[in-house]
Length: 256
Image (cartoon, rainbow, N blue to C red):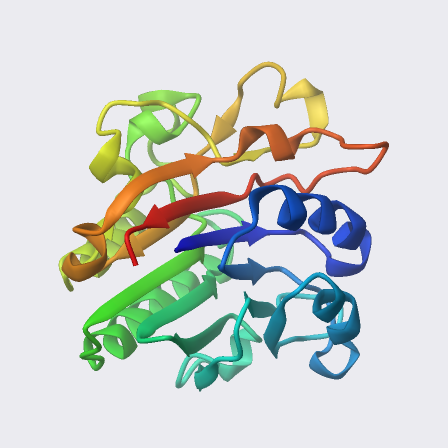
C-alpha cells in the first residue's frame, strides 16, 4: 500500500497538477491539506474519473483537509474536538483496517503573534485526541508546521527560537511521538537532510533553502511494515506549464 500526504496550497489551482502526480505515483491513500475549498464545492467527479473516492472537511478560502482512497472508506472523525474555532484541520478514515488521519496544523505566524500560543494549545488538543485511540494500525500525516530538529531546516541551529523552531513547538511534536508514533522518514533516514517545503520567493527551491515540516507518522504496527519513504521533490517543480504547490508530496510504501 502506498500512502501519502500533500499540502496542495489551493485545490482549484492544483487540480491538473495533482492529476499528473496521481497518475504517475499511483498512491492508494492520500491526505490533502490546505484545500481552501468548501466541502460542498469539492470536485468529486474530477477525482472519481482518476479512480479516487474522497472524504472532505473543507472550508472557504482557508484550511481544509481531505482523504483520497482507491476504494470506498468509512469516515471516523471530522474535525479536532474542541478546536472548531481553528477551522477544518483534521479528518480520519478507516481504510481497510488502517486508521488514517491527516492534519493541517496551525502556522503560528511568529512567536510574538497571538496565534502562537493558540498553536501550542491546538497541539495539546491533538495529543489528547490521539491518546484516546486504540486502533491496531494508525497513521497521522500532514503539514505539521514544526521543524523537529536543526537537521530539518536549511538554517540549522541558526533558526532555533524562530517560529517552527522553538523549544515549545518541538516539545509538542515530541509529545505526539511519545504516544507511540514514529516519524517514518527519520526511522529510515536518521541523518539525511531533505526538505518538504520551500518558499516561492527568492529562488529558495533551487538554492535548497527549505524546511521539513510534512510528515507521515505511524504507530509501531505501521513502522514495522514500512519499506520506503519518499519526499517527492520532483513534484515541487513545474510540470507541463503547471505550477506546483510550495510543498512537495511525501509518500510511504507499506507491506499491507
